[in-house]
Amino acid sequence: MSTHSPLARLLLRRHITELEQERAALEQLRTRHEAERRAAGAAAIRAQEQERQRLAQDLHDEVNQALTAILLRLEATIQEAPPALQDELRDTKQLAAQAMTELLRLARRLRPAVLDDHGLMPALHTQVRDFTEQTGIRATFHPQGAPTRLSPEQQLAIYRVTQEGLSNIAQHASAQRVKVELSFVGRTVLRISDDGRGISEPRDGGSGLGGMRERALLAGGHLSVWSGDGSGTRVELTI
Amino acid sequence: MRTLIADDHGIVRSGIRLLLERQPDIEVVAEASDGVEALELALATQPDLCVLDVGMPRMTGLQATREIRAHLPGTYVLIVSMHDDERYLFEALKAGAAGYVLKREADQALVAALHAIARGEPFLTNAAERTLIRRWMEEGARRPDEPLTAREQQVVKLIAEAHTNMQIAATLHVSEKTVESHRANVLRKLGMRDRVELVRYAIRRGLVEA
Image (cartoon, rainbow over all chains, first blue to last red; front, side, top):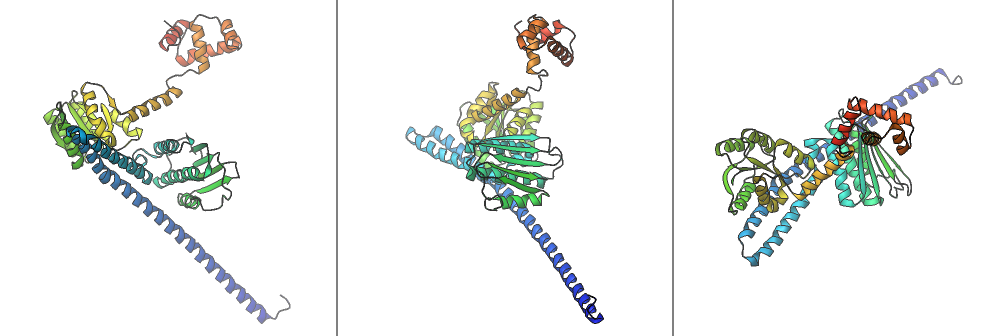
């Protein structure tokens, strides 16, 4: 620096200051952009949840009540119908009952009433049990402590991450056993582990991991995934 | 059997009414569209049976069940519900309902359920019954009301059968000192003083024959 003239030094210093200001502005822009992106993500997820809740409610309140009425009316009709028609009417009733079972399942997936009426733990119990009944994969739930400190959004995040995790296992893992652990001792940790074939690229956002990460972030937590070929997968949500 | 129907969905109410009126021994005496109305009409008509939906405005079916049971002990309540989660079933039974039928099974189960609870028998559909049994077995495995460990129960049985500490130690392959400490722990946990009380406890628990 000492070889430069005072003027050159001055110019150089001014140039450096300008560069630093530009960098600071860029950094500010990046932070703001990140915050905006996150807010947009949160808004999108919130909107999606509201929409799901409304749909589930409509299925319960409108469609399934109508189907209930159809079942009852068909049964009443069967009791008065000539024998030749009874079998036919029973088949029709069977179809209505199937439709109702499907719609109830759909409504529960969209938004389980038990989560709003009875809270996170009963909802998770039911979810894990339903998973076993529907897939034949043996899943167990191991809670430790009670979710007293969690906001409704955080509880919903735990529920949805479990849902996504179990759905991934059912679709990709070829697992035989699944363990869902939820501990409120110290930090809140949700851990879903299976004995399946593992994901070769745990960083890959392909199988719903991206969505799970997003949910974790919005709940003020983070998601970690451990997996190796053939050694199962472990997904951990820490809040 | 004089029956009251309550559901906030008119189409469900009319479906229930249609089916019940086909039964020679059932008469629909009142229809209510929420819990408050159900309670008022129940008090006015004093029916034998009430068919109540769970999710109703102003007063839920479960709240109405509590009120009806408190005021009309001779009136039995059957809950019809959309929810197949066991929590709703337990709540209904706790509220004093005599039966619980899912709406998707109502065509099959409703009439049978009303006949059963009119006889004073509780009614659950097969699925609900299985749920209840599974829950009972899960809780049975923990037995929160059993203060003794499995080992301590073994010791209690042997004490009640008049074995000496030495014999118990030999049977369980432990030292006499261990048996003594088990005995002391058992007495302390149960708040008992001597063998006589322990024998009574063992009989009550079915550990030994009287």
